[in-house]
Image 1 (tube, rainbow over the protein chains, first blue to last red):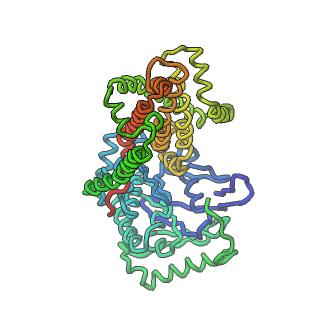
Image 2 (image 1 turned 135 degrees about the vertical axis):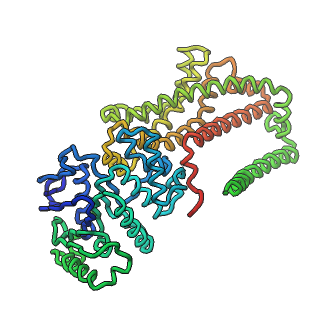
Length: 253
Length: 262
């Protein structure tokens, strides 16, 4: 699949070929500004690729919109809705009766440890809680395929590690397939079954790492030699692009 | 748990202006005594209070007339303002054609318009309602447009990933986002609607505080004039307070932000 900017001049994504199977956790790792978010916008159906095809559960073209749960970098919780109403939003939009959607939201919030905050407004939650609520909303909107775009990017490092463990637990209890964007090498390797390492713009897959490490994977896994060898390989490919380090940074669109 | 805190905040918020007001009135009273000023030119606050106490029904009756003009005019202005805000947001050609005229309409001196309206509609309530509406619609339409346009585009994208249509995006995102802006416009309009009602009465009326003010001013009953001004100000503050109260009921989330920090 290819994608060029609307003006058709600069290629953003080139020969991008990735796939996610049932209940797989797959990460897309790349330098900031390489077009990772564009990739997700295409998969979610917000924009169409210039060439090529995206198939979600057998549906392509406009049929795929609404099939993926898409969590963007910002939690985008609406300040005018309670936490429960925010979490239920995807289902309400999809035509579930409001009360049924709200019940489902309460149930998932209970499981995510946010039960007592269901009737609070989002501004009353901490950063980590907001991300959990946003993930609950994503899960409820589409339980099978989740696109997570740097969901923990704005969190402090400790909260981030805790959120990773929590996400792995949540994912293992579900049937979901997850496609995860990050520019944190450790995060990608710790979480994923497979990591696609992307190049600078125009982004293409530099290498595919099949991460065969046992699950569950605690924090300390980052200290094992096996982990280090995956990390070395990922870093090597991240640094071989035309403009190593600060070569051709571009604002993410 | 922070109710007590908020209450204390309420007292600390109302106390300084209250003290300031009392200080100004006391200074004014003192000034008239020291300078021995002519009460017809500069009546002491005690005279003004007596003027009101002498015949409160006169003020209350006329205040009622003015209040009705304000509320009706504000209502019309709000409906027109919000409708214009929606039209200007959703129709580009309409925005191009109408928006400059909205601004131009605000450069026309309202008393001039009021005079024409009396020629057309006589001494009835209608010209006053129209004048108030003319003043009220503008801040409301501008703030409504502002609110509808300034929506977070990523929230709309999020709605689209759910497969939402335009109506759903409008209902779940645009309207709630715009409401605080709309209320800001309405509060400005509420404060100005006193002005509109008084202008409307000045060019031709048989009642109302603006009408009463003209009569009292002509007969140099300055203490009465000040009493009327005080009642007018009270009317404006009450109307502003009413809109603020409605705002708190309609968009509680907008005020619930500073709660517990966990």
